Image 1: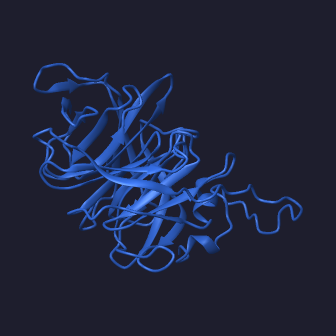
Image 2: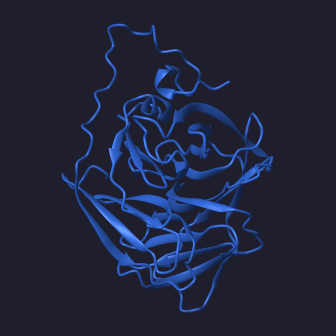
Amino acid sequence: TAPSDARSDARTTDGTDTRDAGADTAPPALAECPTVLSVTPGTTVGHPSITEASGLSGSLRSPGYWWLHNDSGDDARLYAVGPDGADAGTFSLSGVEANDWEDLAAGPCGEATCLYVGDIGDNEPSRSKLRVYRVPEPLLPGPSAHVTPITAFDELVLKYPDGPHNSESLLFDGTTGDLFVVVKTAEGPSPIYRAKAPLAVDGANALEWIATLTFGVPPLGGDPRTTGAAMSPDGTQLVIRTYDSAFLWRRPHGTSVADALAGDPCALPVANEVQGEAIAFRFDGYVTVSEGELPRLWEYRFADGGSAR
């Protein structure tokens, strides 16, 4: 059974116990918690089909553009908006049924960049397997056609080791190729699982537990229900948000995500959103978005302007 607090666990993701290893070897120094210099209501998402935004990621191929998708109830579609929030294209995954799309990440896939779409929601919970779609990132702005089909993508099947869970938060580590899902609970303890790279296309990828974080109590106060997550492109920072709070963990180069999550979190401000669902890094800070029609991309800028690179 996973412990209730990951910060008390000293195992790395490969199971190695580090508590007695290398007494003379100091752990990598943590950077200071970033200071948020400004919080501003940024551009309004003008794509008319985005009414229940659940996943958000900045484009790696077309900087300044944003990718979004809706929660359950929509077709398997990815929506793009420009720096001004205007419609920049709609892309449909051919032959895919969107069960419960909940989060979105971007990262490398070979020599290209890909979007990782997390069909990981499970309100019952009852799903024996989850799916993440690895989609080569289209160039933006998209074609003028109303909907552009995408036929070439990978379906990655993930399987929990201990039965079904509900999750709305997906992390992709571009430095290792690993995927992570964060369980959403109303009680607070949120197990975190990893699908280790290389990710198999044929057959299920076994998820392994790496940590449990307890939201809703200090130092992770606020609403306990996790709704989104993101990792910086260089892998040195990761964030997890709830409906009304967000927290950042610092990850020095060469350390695991489990090691990072065992460290002290940095509390980040979030706007008073209708239903805060998603979070993503930008070049100088981070962005959040809520469900609802014509939602705003709230922008948060770090004081040093470069902590999220």
